[in-house]
Length: 172
Image 1 (cartoon, rainbow, N blue to C red):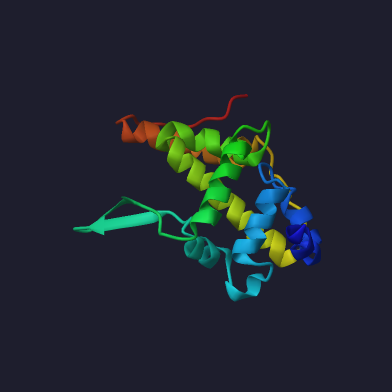
Image 2 (image 1 turned 90 degrees about the horizontal axis):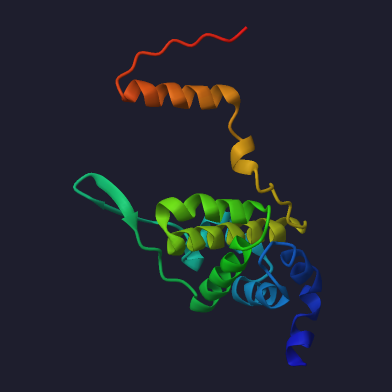
């Protein structure tokens, strides 16, 4: 009863955050309780992610950069984001599921889940800042974003790296 009274002024924000795949009403309420509804205090989504401890870490030593651990942030916010990321990774034909599947093979389950949680947090920032619903890019976003020329250039550079000399001719 008291929670419904507390979140009554934020009903629009809770409804807008619930449009993100994997985010339900309770998670949206947790996001608002932890970060607030006013995004002007953070300035940009990168600062929010850094404050929340959901940005990628970096470890550098002797001039070599490696992956590091994430920062310490609110454990309740991180728990809500990771739970939402796991739910979003099981959805069908969404950008967040495609992002999880793309990263899962290279980075593993945990890192892919944190990356999707980071994306949910960034989306939440822009939703709260602009008061708009979530617009999904689609499950085929990573396939559509590469143009044919970009794909050809990537394949040619891979062949050159293997020691082949390549000339390109368009088929008639």
